[in-house]
Image 1: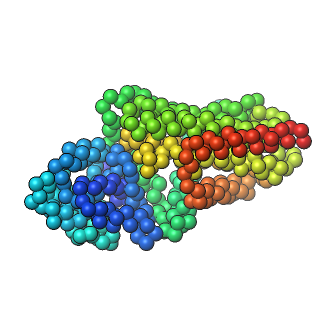
Image 2: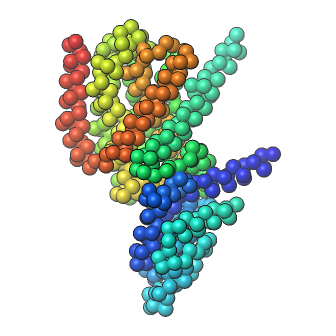
Image 3: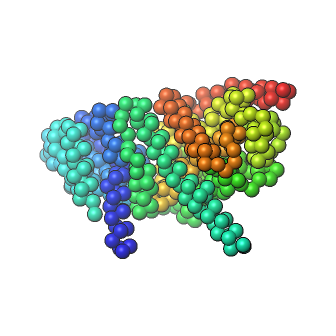
Length: 144
Length: 311
């Protein structure tokens, strides 16, 4: 019986309490403003249990905006390594999905998936807050 | 008969005024706090099971620390602070249950409640992050201003009752009147001291998110972080119960159901006051905090205590 109940409780807890870490990998700041608007009274994601944490060690979901530049790549990897398992990566905006308008530039590697395993892509330039919430909810639906 | 006593003691420690009840109360007050602040800010706020989900999730997460950390102390410090808060709860008549009382348990309780602050500083030191060390140092700096205020303001009740024993303080209030009316100033200042102890706004300098990430807890994750959060939540319940015992006793008779309800009501009202203060005030700078406490609050508290002594 224990074998059935404990994973269910853990799954419930992980779905109900996703803490975000927000990291700009070299974007134009447009998507960052859309992400921060999630915390405002209009969208208030705390009703889903979502908190924005400042330390990678406290976070469950890494939200990246912007394309990955050569300079930020080691830092991005380091931040990802500092997060405790289980962890997920969310690529927000066209740039972090594919490199967007910056792709082909001399200092740009491309999307986040060139460096980290991405679990969910949210397109848009910048993407709407509703789209980000939808992405997080769909990501949590896949949590095992 | 001995068996019955042992069972009663275990029930007391683990279920009713002990661990289980404290845990439920702590989680409920934490939810109430977040919900109230969200409502004050025009948001909807988290559902009632939110603190429980956070706790379960954190306990099930991977536990990693930076290389170079002393793993033994990193594990020991949250355990000591958790244990000291729980021990403090046994000396306090939480939820109108009688507790063992002796001359001087007031001071013991003060000491046990201030241990977590010291452990918090050491935790920042042990985990070796830059932000952790800054946060730990800030907490120690803050400690020297609010702890004196808290002790002085609370000792007004001990002066008025003429005893350092919690039971005597309660009996004196039943005989005369609750100390909240003659000592409203002392109550407000001890509430300010408690806010400093719990590191809530406007005294949240050690864990200021926009300055030092999460203070001394920056490098903690998983089980240890959950234990730290649980310690702070339990400290809220125990600290508020301490205030209720020292200022509001005498509104009810011992060990009655209505007394229990009044206790819970007071707990909720005081938590509401803490939440409102959090929502209203922004964070103080460290020099503003020290100035406020040492130049204004503490002299006023001393005057207040002299007035009580002379009365």
